[in-house]
Length: 173
Image 1 (tube, rainbow, N blue to C red):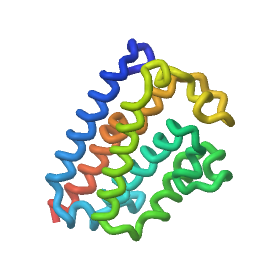
Image 2: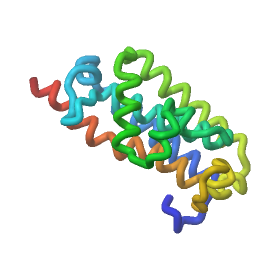
Image 3: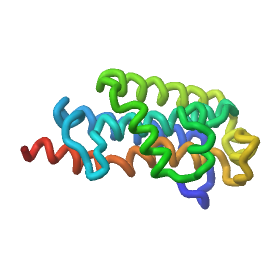
Image 4: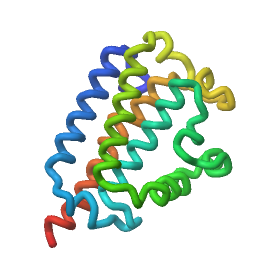
């Protein structure tokens, strides 16, 4: 859904689950070597990309619970408030690089389940409320559901080609 689309909680949940299942099905096609050894130009493994997705989705969990997103994502205020996504993402990657593949996959699954359950418990009107109502230090007026999309199924789809490039390096060697 784009911001011009008529919003539906049912459709949001459907898109989230389709995106989740599609991404999970793709990840299951990769072997441990593909998930953990080759890197992209930034030095990230597939496992790093998955953890990155989990952390940003954890930020959505915090958002929906009206908790500070940056803190929930393990980012110091100076990093979070910088709005420098390259710096934020580098910090996230460094913080979680030592986690095992099993731990990363577990965290990703748990965070996704929490976000899905939270959305199910919310009204459609709650999901249409502006971001600033969930993060009182923010002035963004866009509806919160757009942030959910961008940090769940749209985010998975964004990373999948990058992950495929990394995984293909292992398959080619």
